[in-house]
Length: 482
View 1 (cartoon, rainbow, N blue to C red):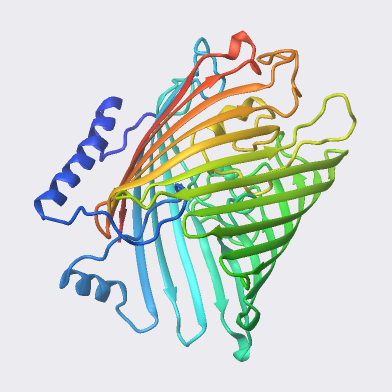
View 2: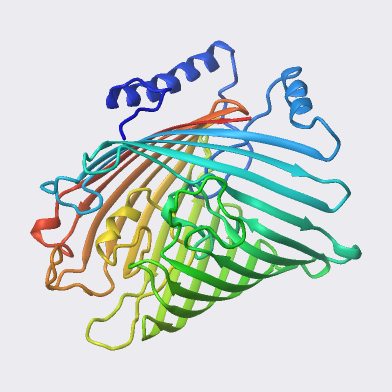
């Protein structure tokens, strides 16, 4: 089937030009309206947040009042919608081999969502969101030209807050889970990219304000074919994960110490193979995370997790750590500097034990949009990173209150040469390579935002000569939010 997205010009690079034109047009419109471009004095996160910008500055009255009336037509009833348009180009990122006929990928993504919240009485909420995304591929020719996803409820849950005047809240149904620094718990549906992130879960939250402590206990299930709790409205028989999964998470957070947050967690994950790349496993993860602000400029966050259990009939024993030291310059651009170190233990091929750290539900582009594709050659699973030492240097600044710029340089190493001597990998190298990333985000107003991403990867001696070509990733996005 060959078709093009109706809202784009027919030529592939015409679509890129269309995205750039829209961004330039909106910037010009913003300037014509005389909007202030002075730097904001509001606090900013110490790093670059790769989650989408949705809410921005409110529109001026009376437009704001008119919009609010439409979105809240009845007491206890609100609704909204968004449309995300993306143009993506990747070269060599998957196999690092320019001689492969499928080394170049160029596609467009159009995701539409509609949501509503119904709150008939205080402390009772019903949340629903419907999502659909279509993907149109220009390259490679071996790909099916048009690939729509299933239409699904990516949110469908009931939330009961402060039950009986207690500090406990229950949220049951399909929901998103983003715990801690989202290192291990973020995306329950990695195979559909960022189309959805949901988990089918029952979540108990206890907020004990008198001791500055929050406790969460979660039971979750992820069905590989999306057919367990809530079936798709339009089912295209697509897998969202390689194995059926169940899990239990216990998470404790305390903020009683000044400028300090301490977290402790236990995560149990069971996987039952559903696709050839899936696994059978029972994984136990114990972890601690601490964050402390030193004076008013320095901040450190450390995360350490150990794993044990079994995975594909092998004993699992692994270790992971994610750490960040950040510094605020407090200049006119609100500049922030950061130094990252991440460690994910790799599997030693000379032992019967599996030492590769499992990233659990952290298969999303935390530090790079491209690198989730680079490691597909190691196990064939997108975003399933392991066997890694990463040292990252980054800067984030705000030239105006609506613009954010981010730039990062990463040195990547392998903990073990697990695939030594196999196709594409060297016999003894451990340097994965250098990764450069740049991101510009702009929030035009409450309804419109956009971003541009560029990333470049230069392979090191971990790869053999047949897989050592540089790779690049380019993306333009426009997000319309109602």
